[in-house]
Image (cartoon, rainbow, N blue to C red; front, top):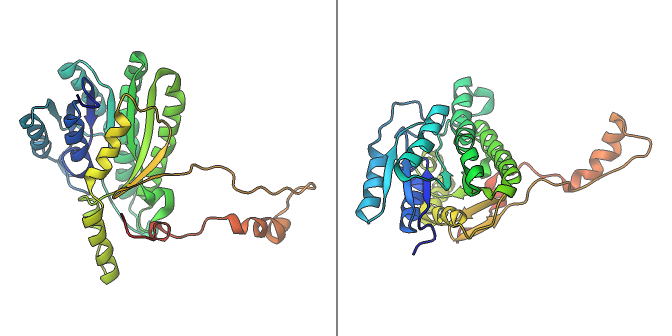
Length: 304
């Protein structure tokens, strides 16, 4: 018997990459799966197709599992509501939502069109809101529910050219934290994963030199979508009591991230002025300030 036997799992962005692997592994663990994917491009904005999601559902069925397809958009409130309604109509229940659906519209912030900012926040942050808001009352009423949402080291640490993506992904961290806090008494859990994995979104990274080519090769060969998906499914098991946490999965490595807490305090009994802050306050805190390094400056070793 699998870890998710008798459970119903809804996976967004489930036609490719991490979402696809989440759907397949959840089904192998006994879950009935709603396979959601708009079927659009990495950049979004196109009409999309239900075909890729149907292929994943067919693969689940061929292996003896149960699955249905949904091609609604997470960015639209009614789309999220339709997914939850479909899970209830088809399977009579819903216990977990795993939501890695996303798009990329990378570009330097000083050149970023409003459309690229709005589109990324609509899919990632608004999409996470739509999915959780449409289901949270159901989860609270049945006193069982679990969310696995997706953040990124682009937000947690930072990457140049991804201001829209980073802002959306950090918003998801805050959303998940509050859902976990408010849901604790009702057995509603929420966690976030910052994944390292070769997906079609990662495949859009421009290769400009030999160093970036080697970095992309490492990601492609050492960091697979199924490694992230196994962790997401583990978080979805009824036996799991973890909530309100930030994780990262990088190949065979799993990391628990810290969450913002004070790291240094300074006091001046007569109060601070702009001048004394410049002369004493900021210099006193300098050694504890976070530098402007990107993800590669934090994860400096090869993936395991």
